[in-house]
Length: 144
Image (cartoon, rainbow, N blue to C red; front, side):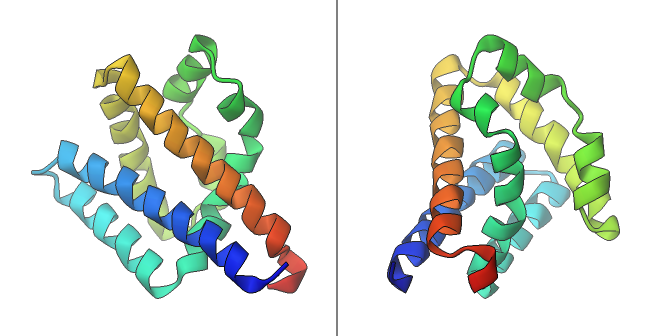
């Protein structure tokens, strides 16, 4: 397959991630940490478009069964799981505090949303997963 196809998946992944980041930032307009996290997300996407998909994608793939087969029990799992093991294993030490701050805010925000809004965000997460899987299909790690 040619290059532009994998780029399309990276661009859509980043566009969806910007939506999620922007919406979360809007929910906490007076929170400087959330603002900083949003600005960092945008900066990383702008300076290195493949970085975020390569960092976030494996976590999405790890939970692909739960993401694709969403039930109330799965929703509870995502909202109640602190993901401490994943944080310690996969996040650079100086970023753990920021990620540990942001994840509960994401969950808090999700719990306040209507079922319809949560479903819209679930669809975005499904697209993120799909784009990551397609990206790795078109552009496998050994080709990077």
